[in-house]
Image 1: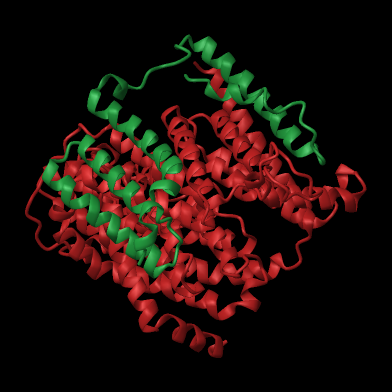
Image 2: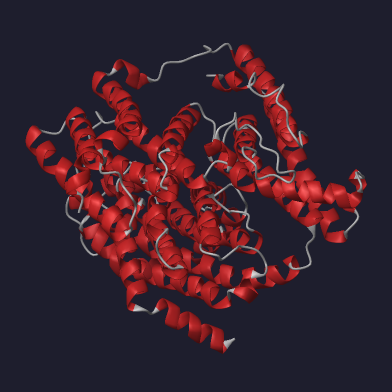
Length: 138
Length: 495
């Protein structure tokens, strides 16, 4: 059993709440439940942390890492590079990593990015950033 | 009344709305049929798009897509032994066993036929129960609402499959998230760490997209190496024998629909738990329980009707009290607020045409399920061949842009990622996600009603039981909590 939630405890006490009862109550409840979980986990004698099976499998593990890293990359890069460059790059990397051929990747990445561009930017008027393509914006 | 109905008809039978319904139906069927993409995920993905629509088509698209997705989840259950949505998981083995015996048409057909009937049953209950409940709810004060919320939260924990303690933890985490920001009775910034983005509170939609879509993508990616194999390639007439089954198992269908509607209406549990419960009930009361698990149709009928009726049942508390009946309506409530259709008892007076339009859409969506479902079953082979390695990245980019679009802020994407990882880790370790969502949606309501009740009562706890309805709700809520606790203790005693 993984008792990951315990790490969230130290952040809670010592805050200056206006109406403090609500988060205070929640914090108390979490401490209590955490203690009970630790107790039952300790009694059942299972390992504190278990590695999920996919970690030992290369294709799956790279996929999971790529998903998380890719979203972070989008957050950092989108304003500078613009949605279109970031979108194509991300899609290409993801599709290729998950095992599609180069031909499929080269076709899908730009087409899907354009499709999302038309759906959101044109039809729904979401201001997706243009980044380096600013002066060719359409 | 008839004037309102006529208005509702013109709202629904508008070419644009009908177009939206058809498009959402196709979307829902596809999402439901592909394992790893769920009905809740379909809703979360629809929200950024519905954001820009008028209220009725926005709600219509969600209603239609979810109804179709819950049915379509049965298709890969029969053909691949993989539930398309968690709601079909209860009878996946059963349905697959039927296909193995050469009864694939029968399994698929009864999934479709009883999904439709169950959906219509749930809709009928929704239409009759919601307005009358609303009249009672008009008299509610903050005391009643406080207990109602507590009751909802308690039943969410009560119904959590497996470990109720983990349900509580999940719920508390959700409540904690709802406490972030300025939006509390005292207007004091909590947990903002001086960050302006946090001061407004955490926006729910990116969180939902994270918890239901991104975490689901992470799960699919981590299992991408497992191949899919079809058990049966050619599918004949699926409706043959349905009338006979309906006459042979009427009681199973009605019982499934009643259980489904009730579970759906209880906060925190939706179509998936309804299906598990109904399957268990069906086995328990069957005249031939030994046949269950070997490819027997009875449980599929009952659970298939149950999961679709749960969908409509969940809307009852959502519309009347603003308390979501399942994770789909948890998202819907957010959409309702954005569209100015604030849920609560007064919605039936202030927005009657729109609400009746929603009811009409429910009926329409369930009727459309028959022709669309047959087409989907015929096209199952092509749909299930859709390459996951292409599909998942495109959905992911769609999620990113969708989270961004809600506030046009990159912070939404950060939230989505964070809660995607949290949701994935929680599910993998047996912490149910539904209570957390419920906590986030209801946190503000709980606190507000508690504080104003406390102020009215001048700090006397007993005042919470003084009004008759509040008192009975309070006792009921405490009873549910007590039963959960006792059950837990008994389970601990018995190793």
